[in-house]
Length: 392
Image (cartoon, rainbow, N blue to C red; front, top):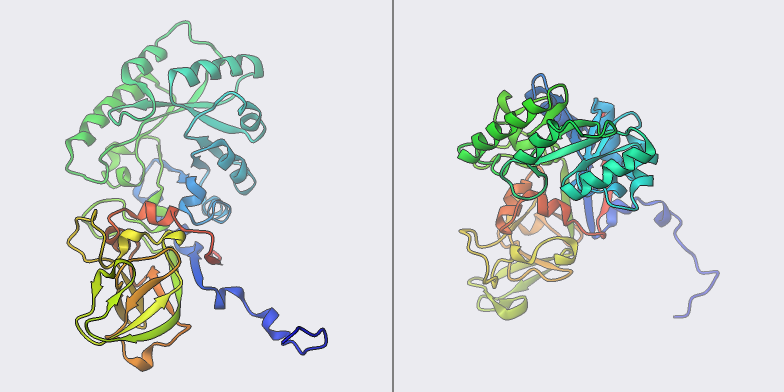
């Protein structure tokens, strides 16, 4: 039927909250986020507590997260790139914002204009920044030291040599020396003590300058690892920081997908690509509007994933009090859940299945995918309609 200008249109449809009918929804609880920061602050003892908001605050929104942590009391922030620091600055106006990837030629103006603190991670960056500081005047920086991770930072010997160098330019004025634990999430690892001892040597060489070793996991290792500043990240967003122990953090994010349809299938039928899922009973299947294009990894599939070597047979969703397994392979835009055990009257098309959240922990969903909560959060796609619950 051709469209006619005078056809009636329900204006109420325009006023509906898009969140209520979006195929994918993500709820972010800023009160829980702020509470998690306060929890990490308490666990950090005498050390100041920063907030790591890199990767768009682990996928949950750097603007909201930055403002939330700033209002909660954070005055030190860590981002990965200069662009992230520029974005954060209006939401943390009086804070120190450290850029973990350091500085490259061409970024000096943004660093100076937004008052960012580059974390110098190599000899090349160190030399470049000394030239910048010599021309632009004194501007704070931080120095990263590699104590065993073999990723970024000067070696311990190089850092100590720099501290004792009488020819070190006066314009080189680090306000922080930091390193990063390789095995902080595994408390029994001997790497932790070895890195601690190496970093203590470096911190002693930079007496009077703040030092920082611990991210989320390191905070749980105790006061010896706290130094002057701690750098919690994943714990702020509800993720588990330490392996094989109960996670004390409040869940922050809940991801949900709408059920497009519920269909019946007979025993002996197969489900999804590759026909890898063979039904052994008459079943009801809920087709939900989420797939790997949305960061819901294909490795969560209930079958047909040859590379996964895990005891689990795949991921689960949660709906109306029931855990429902994924049936067959996750596809680009759709995932099929077996809802046979959910009473028919308890579920219908249009309902939402929780992918992770308060009823299905983030790290449990990540483990089923053969990954970690960090990756699941930072993989969230653009199709989620977001609702932000403001901090109290």
